[in-house]
Image (cartoon, rainbow, N blue to C red; front, side):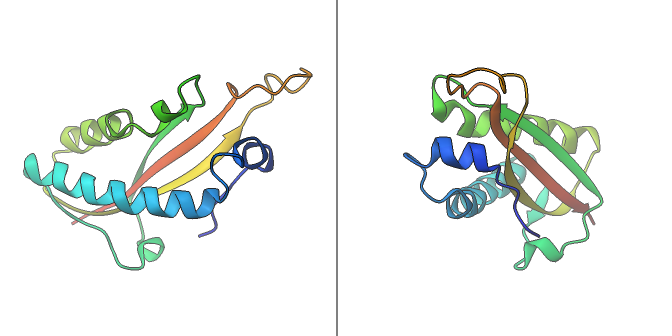
Length: 132
């Protein structure tokens, strides 16, 4: 599955994240491991498929984080994991396979402005899962 990386986001972030695709791949792997640990703590057996994009997922939890003055705020696990964990607990899941897929987005809200504004762009975090 091809990752959608908005050109405008890539251009504006290239000075501190030169390769967003590589950055997202590393972030996904790191956060998948942490999510497996978190699921284990609440009694959910979870795993990530080796070829994760071949998983025929049944459901998806999507979270969007806008760029903010503190750019690191977008990557905080608690902001990403909270809606995922809440959804899995509501479904009373005991065993799942999942993967994370991250992309960028950019809206049109500030398109007519002559100054570069980060606040209408950000990251889209997708948690795709298959319940056993």
